[in-house]
Image (cartoon, rainbow, N blue to C red; front, side):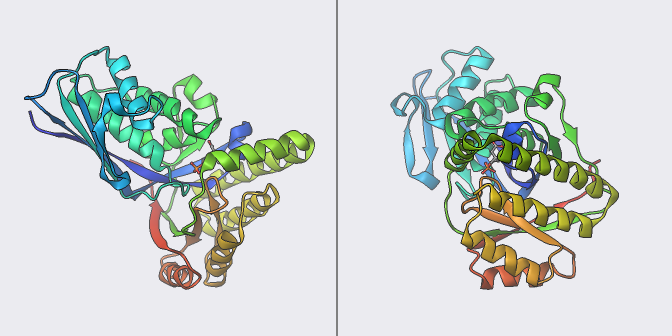
Length: 321
Ligand code: PMV
């Protein structure tokens, strides 16, 4: 039997992170330049039920039964076995690799889960529907993010720009995709600082508990920014979107999830001619994004490198067919 391969992209959040955990909308888009990849190959000489797991990027080479019970790969595999009602699959090797930087707001964990679930369910002859892949990936995300909104699993499963409201999309079984009337180009700069989302999300929760009305105000203002951002994306107005990104960054600074390294890159991007710039994802490190034109793209990328970005990625949000 030939090996089965599945991939899943990274993602960025254009606006609305953190507030989305409290019921406000957010906009996220896939970053297809980086991918998680899962390859399943049959091991016909091994006993049925044996699942060998290899993740060379993190030095992992083991069998499923030897992984800690709550390891994300173990959980992803078991969720697929449960959903496909296959107790003892034919012996197999699952090999996972990824070019998505980890713990940096680009959704690497969700992408690994999505790729794994797709490859494994197809190998078992029972490919899971997108809704199931997204919902099961959400279960894995909960282990690591505590109270995830569900935006990562959604944008990464569907690989489309989305306008996302927690609970609503999943409950209705539908996803609001965004249609743009011109391409929007983003340059993504990595601070090189690993920043687990759960810690930032947990700290925001503590601050919200300490002053609910202040934080509710920040979240609602963010929601308004996101709604306006959707309109200007659909109307093709990059200058207006840049201003909204700057406004969102101001709020993210107030809620305590920015950091000097992110702000240095954001300043550099703006000075080099970006329409706007902000952190993307959990914050406190990880990546920032800058909205650019074709003309300013390379100068913004160079300015980011000079300001200390450890990696530059690109993403263009273009029309869907
Ligand atoms: O995975 P990250 O770092 O992009 O964070 C996701 C965005 C948050 O709003 C901070 C958390 C969430 O679950 O929505």
